[in-house]
Length: 205
Image (cartoon, rainbow, N blue to C red; front, side):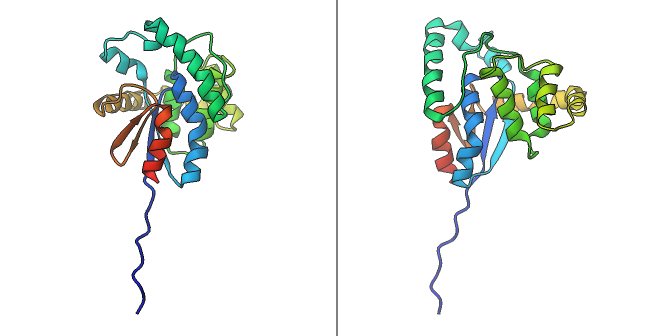
């Protein structure tokens, strides 16, 4: 008679809600695939626009811009946190940068194998190279660098259905109670901020 065996526990997926304009999203996007792989956790990429979320809260722009002491602290914290996680970083001369087009492309690629490389390349362009990320030329250069059909993907991103897709994702984020980025969901539980990514992965695993 065989002994009863313990059921095998399966890791839950982790949803990462992010905006390419978000500095703390930069840290999480750059490290999440590496860290999730170590936990055996699948990633679900959730691009959305943070701007409409802020406006619904009565903020016309990032709170880091609206409140100078908070912004001053954030730039110092970013240097520390990027060093802690081994993430490249340069304080951008433009913040926050427009991010609609690269997010629309991310909406197309969210379930494609290239999504992680694409997101890291966009973040690297914004927060390491300190370059624009919103224009077709900028996004096209990133896509071409990854060996992807840039013109085709940009045309698809600019089409009406995909614009509605990103808008819908942003409305879903608001309905979920998301108020900043990055935000993670695991088993229906919300974790906010790059400093909670490790907790979210532990909860998933």
